Image (cartoon, rainbow, N blue to C red; front, side, top):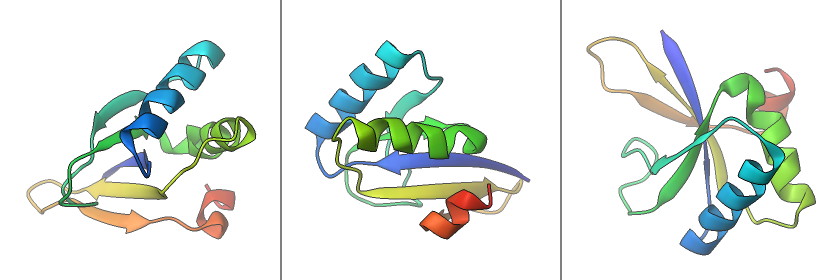
Length: 94
């Protein structure tokens, strides 16, 4: 099983601002459409390695950026990917 981590934002403005902040800091990430297993609405999410999620979250929050949610999606072959919303406790254990 492989897992990917995602950060969602309340508006496109925050997603674009996050991209700008993280490019400036040299972080590794990718902007992607919000996966359907997270939300059926349109939008942009930030995809990153799960072991980078906590550091990226801190960078964004320290810059005053608003984050909507943190998620991990586990893909296991033929099954539909399952999204799990992460709590701060989950982040600490990563």
